[in-house]
Length: 209
Image (cartoon, rainbow, N blue to C red; front, top):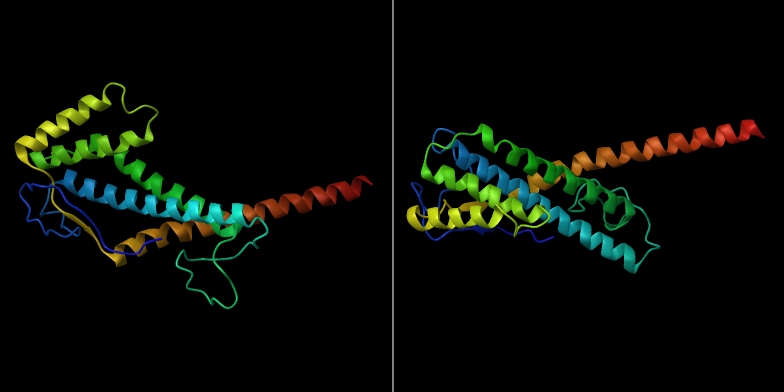
């Protein structure tokens, strides 16, 4: 997983300097712009975790005999002499972490109707989220998706684009680690539940003999 600064820029800016950092204060920007920024962070984390999951899945397919591991960090901070990142356990954690990140992005999308834009930039930001979500639906070529995208292009041509969004390494690590830790707890709980059920089944079988 690449760990570098990621910058999303648009050609024109409304009401904000081009180097405006992601950590805007609530008083400084439209609430819809803040929602857009948070959605982009959640979306970015989910994409990174998706790449991790795909890479681990490929490793398992190439080497199905790889041992399960107990990683608690996608960066593999633990002692590398005692473990190697990339087993079924890590794959299960990465898969669940991606779900956590995407769920956060979906919750932000769902909150769009509750957030009132107070500027043209805020209205554009809400449309950016809606259009950005079309990749998750069955057919983004059906009505009203191309029509919404067309309206968004018109607004941006008239009023300009959105502020620059800069993602620092620290924030990216923090976002990914948050979902990874939640996934570790979930996978561990599911593993314990499965082992308990298996033990109960074995006990029932022995009693039936």
